[in-house]
Length: 462
Image 1 (cartoon, helix red, strand yellow):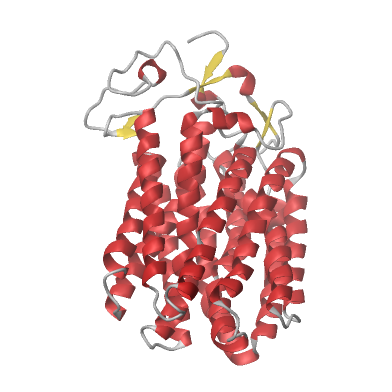
Image 2 (cartoon, rainbow, N blue to C red):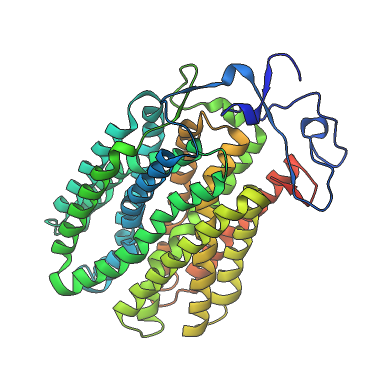
């Protein structure tokens, strides 16, 4: 092996995808000598990256990976994501309530900005919290986030206007949730060298589990106690649960040298730039069905509001199955391969099942396939980042990716809602659904380009 380099399996870091020059060139890859592949044609062949030795990470704790403590960390991440992202996933219930009951004269686009601001602030906060997670105790940061997001929902329960809800339910909650969001997303991969994909998928399935039970619970609370008390109960539960697991929300690895808040040099790697573009379209596609299926069920299919919220519950439940399945399979097939497959399924579910039909059966088909595939997409994104761009810098890498999340948030729900208001006049969802379907198709195209940049071998595990 070339002097000054170490094998990526021996270190938890990789920079700029640099490779071992002693690996024989592969004529079937775009990068030629840049990649080495196993020569066993009947097995998935793993691309072999090598990283510079000066990017070694420092152990931040004496706890060992793959052990009991590692699984406690996974549980803590599961709970933190269950409440932080799970609450964000329930906004479709609030949007339905605001649109049909509390603010019937407000436009759909205006109301959707409450949930959009919530996610956008979470993304911008994620950039900074990723940097903070590398330099400060993540357990304390997680606890601070728990207090802020709980207090934001309690404050939102007293708000009577869309503008004030944007400040509390949107801005303040997004800021608080960014800490458990970034920590819960980036920490799991550091604690496992075996079955990393499954462990990460298990942790990230917490967001789907949260969205599943909290969607039904939120609708029940609104129906029985009213929206203000629904928000107070949610805020108290979120604060208490995330505070309880914060002692286990700790990193295992930190970079050996101080890094910038945002390492823009990563964008010099063309693969990373393409990955960022694909991420933007994936995130833009994520929230559309969750936000619009409940009201679509009422307005177009003439179902009850509870039936519409149950569709969100079903999507969240299937996303849990998608997260776990894809997390387990990624250890054998490769995370990027599965990201491509799930993006194709997400596009297929909307463009083939939902666009041509206005029926309960086809909406159910869309909900089943989209819920499963989108869960797999969000689960495997950090695994792709860890395997291709490095474990030690994963919090800051994901922090940079949150800029892509931010762009995806702007590209997703606001244009969909504007199309529903201005083209569909709040009753015809066709243009909005078409837009939802094109987004994962764009992501799929960029992911295929990224894979071709890495290897053209069909059975390569990437």
